[in-house]
Length: 244
Image (cartoon, rainbow, N blue to C red; front, side, top):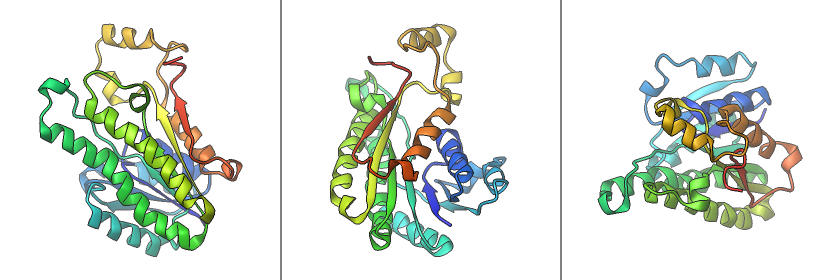
């Protein structure tokens, strides 16, 4: 059976992607930065209920050595890595003039360097297999920019360039690499917004609603499927028409 490794998958978009890929028949390697992320969390049980195998791998994906050992462990556990979803990400927002070096560096490390780390090691596994799907989580902030998010926007724009480069480097080995760029998605973070903030954001969206995490997972499912075998180097915006 094929296996999928999803970073940052204890909750939110990552967990939704993991659950959807389990429904598609993939064994699932869950990942997050600490075991505490999975406490009082039933995502692993939900995945196993789909009739596939699931295991949790704790790894700080900004750490090059930890990523190498984690990929080796996933390969040993499942026998292959057929899909890699680089989903892990953080925000440390602030206007550029007030942003600290630590705020900038931490976001670049987790959001951008992690994609290099995991893609390098999982990509090596896929090259030996002569097949694989790599799917990266970018953002509309990486396409259009966003005030107060120079670090986040930079990291997500870099992911787009990395996606296209990996697609060109690994395409001849039967490996595709694509990115999705979500807009405003309903998560615990958006639940904390005031009514005025929520209304202002929704007014920018053609469909006049937030996206659901399952709608991101559906596009990732397509990119991981046989139907997307000739799709590579693409960035698919999932934003309800936010920036038309």
